[in-house]
Every structure is written in structure tokens, then in C-alpha cells.
Amino acid sequence: MLKSVLVGLGLVLAAQAAFDSINKDVVVKSCDRTLDLTTQLVKLQHKIVVENQGKGAVKSILFSLDPVLKDKVAFIGATFGTSDKTYLRVTEAKVQSDLDKPFWKIELKSSLAAGGSTTISVEVVLGGALEMFPTAISQKEKQLVRFTGNLYTFLPYLTNTQTTTVQLASSNLESYTKTKPVSLSDSTITYGPYNNIAPFSVGDLAIHGENNSPMLVVARLERVIEVSMWGNIAVEETIDVVHKGAALKGSFSRYEFQRENSGVSSVKNFKTLLPAAAKDVYYRDDIGNISTSHMKVMDDAVELDLRPRFPLFGGWKTHYVTGYNVPSYEYIFYKGDQHVLNMRVIDHIFDDMLVEEVEVRIILPEGVTNLELSTPYAMARGEDTLHYTYLDTTGRTVVTLYSSRLLTESHIQDFQLGFSYPHRSMLVEPLILVAAFFLLYLLAIIYVRLDFSITLDEGAEAKMKVAGYCEKVASLQDRRAGLYHSLEEALIKLKANKDIQSFQNTLKRIGGDQKAETVAIAELQVIIRGVNMDLGDKVGELQKQDKAFRDLQAQQASLVEKLVQGKMAKQAYIDQEGSIVKKKEDAIEKINNIIKSF
Image 1 (spheres, rainbow, N blue to C red):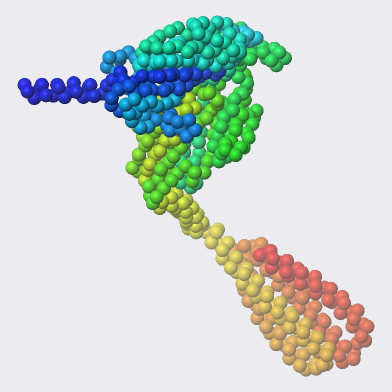
Image 2 (image 1 turned 90 degrees about the vertical axis):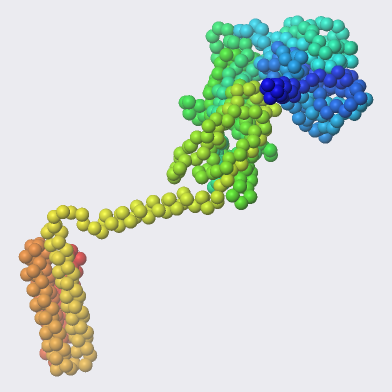
């Protein structure tokens, strides 16, 4: 029984510890609130002077908003100081006595001593807080919006004095709350000062006026970050944009749009800022590349001027894809095998953007382990999956993040994803390529070298034999050509020394060698003719031309002998030798052509 009581008491204490309480000793000496209604986002800037009238130190204060605005809060942040700002920690809180009200706990830079005061700035960004009124307009009409809020700052503390300055998008006002003191100057409305405002005070504030600012909302953003350890990170964003301004009433006339410059609330183009190192930028939709875009490289960013295929009016939407590459050394930091990827969760899409749904997929290199993720704000993490691409074996780990909260430019912050990746793993893909090419060439060698036929190809074998015989014939003919040359040299020598006896001996020796070569070729001719009749005939023609050439050489030798013995006149010798030389050249040409045809 005692144990049950103790457990119950512990649960009660734990529940009470989870709640914060409103410190009655804290008083707001002054609150200067600026309400910016110039864009689709409602931006509230509070300059709050807080005083501790108690006896103990105060480490934190509570900030609250009207409950009707809770679901429209996209961002809330607090800073301390003017020139050198210090960002204070802001967390959601609950107060047991006021569970119906939203609270945020702001931790001060240093404890506020008794009797002391400090100044903090609180920024709140609301999305979807402007009401289109009327909800539909024609192409020529201007867009009117209405903001409904609280005239007073909805603080949980007594406020001594408060002023509110409203900045409008235009000086054209339909109506506005006129609770005194109030003043209107051009496009600025000033309310207050109001004194001694009780905690959680409520007063009607309604402002209705012209606002033709782009009411573009990113209905869904899918951001894919593919990391390569070879020096590149590829980023691709698939974006669905909706114009949530006053809907277009009636049909759209492009003629009037271009001639009269009507449709002042429509969006013709918008500018996206990419990282300064971005390259290989593309912008396309379902049809293909959109060539009307322009890119400008600046010192600190790459400005991409996106122009959809048609102007966006209220209720219209567009779907497009942008992508680019950045060097990995700017975003990946490592020590040994431990790596940290530091990149933005979302990036700039257009000025005063509002994102309703985000999916971020981070594709890591194959083989990473020990993942540790840190996000700048709460995001849901899906189950890790695998992605396969070129040369992957086990697949690349994919970390998926989701967010369905309203995000603005204030949420362009970095996440950190730590992982382990051994550098030797980078050699896996090159080795796979080397092995693949090695196997390819090895298979090609095996295929070419080996004979996979079941039966013996007798024709191919016979061709190989004939080719071998033809090579032998060509070799024997080369020897005969050498003998031709030797006889020519002997004739030249005979003309010089007139030694007929020595010439006869040389002629006899050359004739014997020629006979041996001719007999060998004749034997090969018989073999070749038995396998290939055409080649056998060519060898026979070779023999015929050889005999004709040798006969011409014999005639020339006879003429030289007569010339040397003085039995023939020199002029007659020259005439007859010229005819013989020409016939020898024809015979040699025919012999060479036959050899080439083998």
C-alpha cells in the first residue's frame, strides 16, 4: 500500500515538474511591437523591457500569443543586445493554470537579479494569417487582404506601457481598427501608447487593405542530397508551388495581361538563391527544360531567376525541378574514418517563402556505418532505406527526414549527419571496373583462341596447309630472285674483266642452284594442285615466268660473250639488250604479282 502511494506521489511530482509557472514578480516595463503586413508572412517584432520586482533571481521568462494564432506560428526566436546580438534559447512550455494558451520559455543570457531589468527582442513569424477579402477577383482588380489579431501583446505579465506599429503593403486602406490613441501616416498605423495592460488582455484588431505581394506557398518540397566521396554532392529539389492569393474570377486573357499590364497580384517570376559554389544548374518541369530562366553568379550566391511557363494567379500552381552540384569539401569534414556532413535542411526558394511540407532524403556513400543525426529543429525521421546506382553492390544508405510544420527563411539552418566511412572503401568501385574489363578481355581471348566446334572442319584445315605450302613457294622464289641478281652481277663483271672462263663457271653454278629450287617448287605444285586447283595453276604460271626470265638472262649472257669476243658491234649489242631488258622487267612484274596473290 505504501509503495503504491509513493509511486503515485512520484508521478504527480513528475507531472508538476513538466509544467512552468508564471512568475508574478516579473513586470514588463514597456513593449514596443512592430506588425509587418507588407508580405504574405505576418512578422511580429517585440522589444520587451522586463523588470524583476521580486527578491530572487529570474533565469527565464514566458512569452505567449493569442490562442487563435497558435496554429499559424511558423517561427519564434529571441535575441539579446542590439549590435552584437545573442540568440536566446526558446522552447515550448505549458502552464498548468492556462493549458488553453500557447507559451514559450525564453532563457535569459544571465540571471536577472532582484530589482534589475533587461531588454530582449522576440520575433514571431505567422504563416497563413492573412485572409483574402474578397476571396476571388477579376484579372484587372487589385488584391485586398484582411488581418485579424489582438490589439494588445498577449503577455502573461502586467505591462506598464505598450505601442504597436503596423507596416502596410500599401497606403490604400479599406478599414482599420480605430481604438484611440491611433494615428495613420501613409502606409503606417501607430496604436498607443496603452498603459497598465493586464496579463492576457484582448482587444480587437482588424486591418483591411491592398496587398499585391506574391502569395506563393510551397505546398511540398522534396529535397534529395546525394553524397559522393569522390568530391561532389548533387542536390535536386522537386517543388510544388501554389499561389494562395485571391482566386482568379473569370477567364484569363493574355492579351489584356500583356497590353494593359493587368494582373498585379499575379507572379511572373521569382528568384532563388543557390550556394556560391553551385554549378551544372538545371531548371525543368514535366515538359522539359525551361529556357526562360536566367542565372547570375554573385560573390556569395548564385541567383537563379525562375520564370514559369505561365503567370501564376490566385489558386494556380506549378510543379518544377531544380538541381545543381557543389564540391563536397565545403560540406564534409572528417578526421580519420569519422565524417560529418553539414548542409542546410532547406534552402532559399524565393523571398518571404512559406513551406508547408518537406521531405529531405540524404543518400550516403555505400558502406557507411554509425549514423548520428542532429537537426536544428524538430523533424520526423523515417526508416533508413537503400538506394542503388552504378556499380553498387550492397546499396547506399538513405536517411529520410519529414516535416509538416510551417517553415520560412528563418528555418534555413544546417543539419549535421555524422557517419563512419573507411577511405579504403573508395577503391571498391575502381576495382570492380578493373575486374569487369579483365574478365571481358579474358573471355574474348578464350573465345577467339579456342575451337568450340563439335566436328572437325576439314576445309579450314586444308586451307591452313595450303597457306603453309604457299609460304614455302614464296620462300623458294625469294632464293631464285637472289640467283637472278647473282647472274646480273656476273654479267657486269664479265663486261669489266672479259674473263669468259670464270663467267662460264659462275653460270654453271647458278644454273645448278636454280634447277634445285625449280624442282622443289614443282614438287610443291603437285601437292597444292591436289588441294586447290587455282593455287596450283598459279604456281604453274610462276614456273612458266621463271623459265621465261632465265631464258632471257641466257640470251643476254650470249650477247655479252659475243661483245667481249668482238663478234658483235657495240651498237647492235645495245639495241638487242634493250629489248631483252624490257622483257625481263615484264617477267619480274608478273612473278611478283603471282607471289602477292597467294
